[in-house]
Amino acid sequence: MTRGRFITLEGMDGAGKTTHLDWLRARLEARGMPLIVTREPGGTPLGEALRQLLLDSHDTRNPETEALLMFAARREHLAQVITPALEAGQWVLCDRFTDATYAYQAGGSGMDWHRVAELERWVQGPLQPDLTLYFDVDPEIGQARTRQVRAPDRFEREQQAFYERVRAAYLRRASEHPHRIKVIDAARPIPEIQITLEKIILTI
Ligand SMILES: Nc1ncnc2c1ncn2[C@@H]1O[C@H](COP(=O)(O)OP(=O)(O)OP(=O)(O)O)[C@@H](O)[C@H]1O
Ligand SMILES: [Mg+2]
Image (cartoon, rainbow, N blue to C red; front, side, top):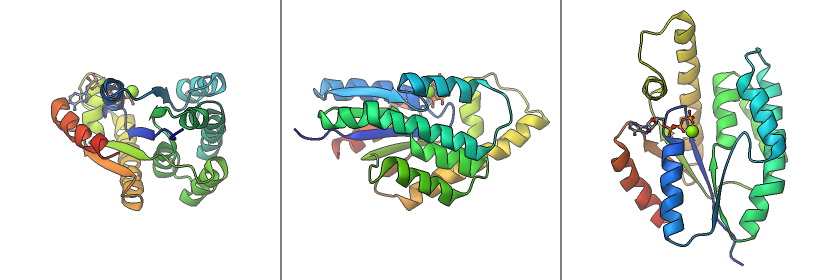
């Protein structure tokens, strides 16, 4: 049995991950690829419960606590869902994965980069996605796509600096893993991005 391919989609809110994931699923299914679609945080009952805690609570949290919860959910996701699917020959399309922990908890919130790397090694061993599509867009464009446009207040300007650090961390990951991570200019119109994606998926 040929092992399936593990493809992750990354990028900030409104970058287009879900839009392109739906399109990729349809393209790959049309080619007869057996596949599953999943997401992080989430993908298992435990992971979805942790997702609720992580995304809905407005408490200030230590970024290391967040990263530990992310990796706890990831361990479960790998053991219960991702690894069995890959071993059964299925392709796995995952909306966010470990690069997001580097981007948000290290880049955005200031957790030590190397600590994330230690958790990554511990939880994943040698497992890495075969391909990561990073949808790169100015955070303001992404946010404007998901909510009404208006002038940012002081809190949102601070948020702006956070999102710039998240973007810089994603770009650092891409420069450190140039073969795995494809940077896609997600400010372009959707049909143009689809042409780029079509070329990329033909090579894997
Ligand atoms: N390249 C694009 N040009 C214009 N609009 C886009 C583009 N990509 C996505 N959109 C639109 O932006 C909105 C957000 O896209 P989408 O939900 O795919 O983003 P996402 O990365 O999954 O965001 P989130 O992290 O919040 O889930 C949707 O309404 C989508 O149609
Ligand atoms: Mg989405």
